[in-house]
Image (cartoon, rainbow, N blue to C red; front, side, top):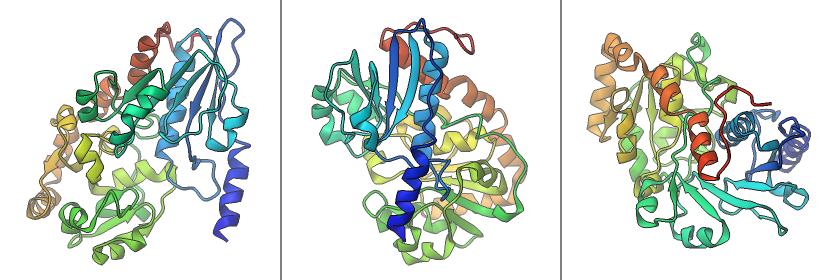
Length: 338
């Protein structure tokens, strides 16, 4: 059954490939590459954060760079048929096909690949990296943290009674990046409250107490509804993110909805200090949850202005502009240069 579901998902994906319309005067065909794509168009409605970032990157570069005549999102199964002058790869193990093109570029948004960076620097002409520590160690890397996944999707909306809870966490489970001692510190303290975990594979989580909070996978379109329907949203990075100082987009997505977030701390998150409540985990987290549940006015005050801040500093448009200018592409600030 699972094999059939995967085949059906890929069948749907291959008929919903996102591609920018052509521009006759443009000289560059852009390809944005993901290794595994779980689409928001999938009939199984899985969370698709990586795809959201890739789609937004393609859209923004196409909208603001006159040299780009078209763009397309590729997955690994389409590598052999790829046609692109500029290739931006967002997965370290993407099977880049042979052939001549103007540039092969990597945007390494994931943590856990630090040992592969020397190889990636040999393989790609430019490597943008969302992890602060490897960028400090390798001068060839260009620091480019991930932004809010999609500010058009993540916005203030009406709460959904089906998703109502005191505390929520949205994200996938992995025994490698989220070992039991890490989860015991950053998620287990939420279990005395009305706590809901949404994502994938939490039915296998350790410690087992977290399995009782698992509610299943969540359609992408309901991500903002979960944010605004939770009194408190938790953001918890994996151990690799802590090792490499790699800030994920979760806290920024929540803030774009003007929802309240308590997060573990990374140095790269210092820019969010005015809007995010940081925790050391454990007893500190439990006490902060209890306090802010009892003080809704302080939750509201904390996130006032948060969406404006995200729109000014942490959207894909800002990241795409940095990338375009680094690549030597002209950037036009109008909404569509076509």
